[in-house]
Image 1 (cartoon, rainbow over the protein chains, first blue to last red):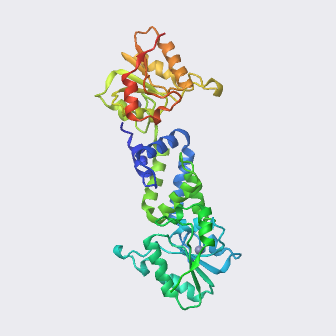
Image 2: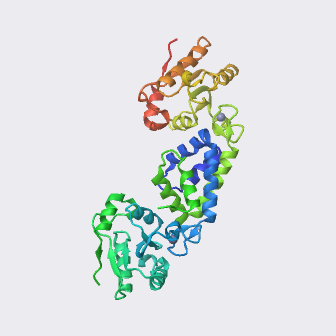
Image 3: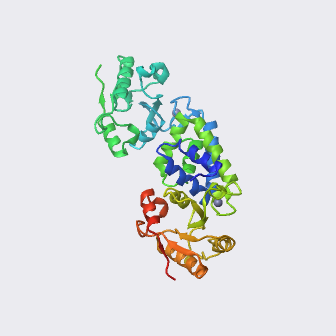
Length: 199
Length: 199
Ligand SMILES: [Zn+2]
Ligand SMILES: [Zn+2]
């Protein structure tokens, strides 16, 4: 079957969504056209507004169109705790554990083979923030993958001897997994079971 | 966690897509913002163009922004066969069987309890088209549900005695199923095994 050009373009465009293959994209396109055109228009407007307007929080570097994201702007959170994660989706995952400290969001993990060193993922900004803040503890919640472990280890080395407790989430997170895919209960357990990093 | 307003609006808007819940919508939104903003903008443009521009084929009533859809405009298809389906997604499913006749796309099926009678689903337009064409056979490929069967039966009654073979797809389509969800092989089998409808 061939769709008319506008439908074909919509199907192609929907395939940029994670987990959406050709058949799912066709169902999405035709279902919107048949049953919810106003919803489709709202989605188009929300996409445009977000793609053009969303930048990064000036403090934690997560995605936000405001100078400070809701987590950084909230005066009731614990200023003595900083949780370091690999990306904005991890903030969402960690929030579900009940954690209510602050965050720093890296741009992924160290990946020397891809040319991604400390500067590329925002470690200088992390160190600068730590140096002007008074965190009692840094929770290194990078993914429990080889690269995530190496990234946590690198940060721990850079901050060793500065009188800050450096901890790493541990129990419950499956090795080789992605933090953002772990359920909230497992991640809460991993948080409770965090341990200091030995130098 | 709270997202900033533009991200929250995007997550809400993505949930109109079939099969997309809260968690999937969050992943979609953040992944586009982090990794593919130009893809997100293309999707916004494709949505706007399709929602505003796509209407219905003047002949078969499927979704199309052109006066005639690709199936109706193609001069090489078999003009002696008409396949009647409940919606545009079914055209896609039937095409995968290798069928290369013509189509008529109803607006769903008869549903008296919802006030959907023959006019509401386009049966007068179907009868008008049949009366000015020279189809040798009508394949009634409505869904194998109670409503789809009733719709096929109603159409067969209206066209009885006009010298047109009326057939119904049969073997291989699971009862109570949705045509658009059946794999191409099963549906090809159902087409091959179609049988005339007894008055
Ligand atoms: Zn922030
Ligand atoms: Zn058509």
